[in-house]
Image (cartoon, rainbow, N blue to C red; front, side, top):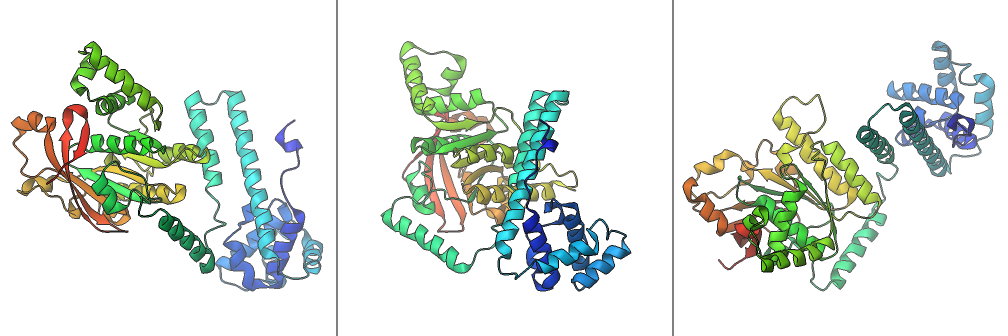
Amino acid sequence: MQIEDIKMPSSREAEDYIVGCILIDSSIADEVLNSLTAADFYYPDNRTLMEVIEILADEQKDINSVTVINELNRISKLEMAGGYDHISEILNNIPSTANIDSYINVIQEASVERQLANACDKVRSDILKGKYVHRELMQNSERALFDIINGQNTDDFKKVNLLTDEVIEVIENNKENEGGLIGIDTGFEELNKITNGFKKSELIILAARPAVGKSAFALNVAAAACKTKKHVVLFSLEMGSGQLLMRMLASQSGVDLSRITSGNLDDEQMALILQAKVVLDKYQLYIDQSSTNNVRDIKAKCQKLHREGNLDLIIIDYLQLLVSGDKNVGNIVQEVTKISRALKQMAIQFGVPVLALSQLSRDIEKRPDKKPVLADLRDSGSIEQDADIVMFLYRENDKKEEDTSKIIQSAKTKLLVAKNRQGRTGEVNLMFKGKYSQFIEVDD
């Protein structure tokens, strides 16, 4: 049976009620138009009436039965709107406007259900016609459903008493935590003290110059989160899944990364790696293998995990390799601005922390202490504005390039929390064990 043969979700009663309410009391038009558009109305006569109401509202004209009928006559659509009889009927059947919210919800839900049905019908048609290759079909389907689900704005506003109830509940839960972490365990005790862990809806930026170890640090955070049973999704635009897992195996096993990558291993080392594999296999870690760099695709993939209840932390390596997907962006600064804001919106929408790695500008190399400042964030000041936490990895008195290989093997590194919207700033002293792809905390 074709989808057209089935009665689509709709409510004649709710649609008539809403249109009638607006014609009786134009003061509620703004409230309705903030929640519904003409496209949400299923019946052609009511959809036409709402289109005219939208026109009058845009032109800031009075909205009532007379002005609506006059506009319908002007554009020759009175018959499409059901004529005088339909308008008269809905006006006579509206006892009051007291229940408008419930009727708005009925129309919204029916509209979403129709959109989902149409989207599924299109997917079915695309499959039968062989219009797309499998990967394109999956991406288009995911994006279509994602756009519908996230196009709703029914909960944009809440009365303050409802919000304070929610906040008090959070405070009480934190109090019962008895000083424990509020957010996700980063694996670094001093960093946890400064941040209280990576919290829901936070955008965290970790920035460094190349070869300082920001990718290794992010993997250490991912492992720490996974050890506390958190679900972590990792998007790496620089390394494949094999490289990432070799680093994690080195960190977990204590076997030199160069030996793992070369295969130059004795039996004892191989046994340690297999033990590390057992640990890693238990992690709720999801690694994106498509190497997609479109922030919209990343959001769609995270949406799937979120719906399944498998999303607690998002890690992206790294920000400057992403693209917004907006063809109208004029330059790199605008592009990075769109991306950083999209990442913050993602954190809020999914209610999870997003850890995004970022490059620093070369200006830092001109300073003798190599200590980064917020202005060193590359390409855009919007990164600083959008982020809840900004952290820098850097090495003081870095040696010359010819000694870099020795430094990477064991390098004192500082983690500077330069911005913390919900707490204090500070520094954490670390040692980077390059051959194990691992950071450990040390005394100054």
